[in-house]
Image (cartoon, rainbow, N blue to C red; front, side):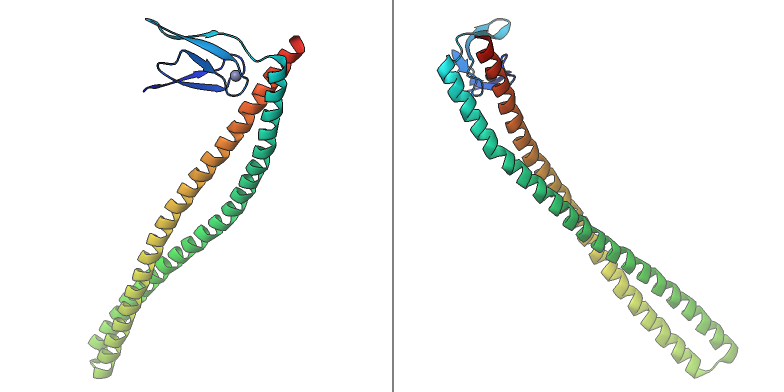
Length: 202
Ligand SMILES: [Zn+2]
């Protein structure tokens, strides 16, 4: 069955009802609407609302719900602030490691090439076995260091990428949870305001 979404004309809260419903009641301000289906679509005609006693009870219930929701929202905001500090720190640490290992790989690579060239030049000039050996040894060690640093760099880059995605999905989750709580409080406060207005008028 299709679910129809409308807004309560009295308090602005969301109204959801089945496509075959004859009447719909606002869960917040208690307004009742008769549902009219016609060629032009779905119309809502205001029927009776709450009586004075029911209105007071509803106000009390909504206030109680707000009292429960507000600390949860505050707790969630605190949790979010803590998470933000720790996750940013963690992300920065991994980013720093990544940049450091990349710099090391570039440094060792440059030293290897320069060292290699230097010893080749020495070999040509001196033609001694010891410089050939030293040159080979330095180049091999340099190459090994470069490979190790490149490997570390790739691991850190991957770690940074995964962590970045995790942080982003956590941020979205926090946003959704906080928005839901904020909306839940706002819709109740709006309904309370509306019910108080009706009480004052009657
Ligand atoms: Zn309403």
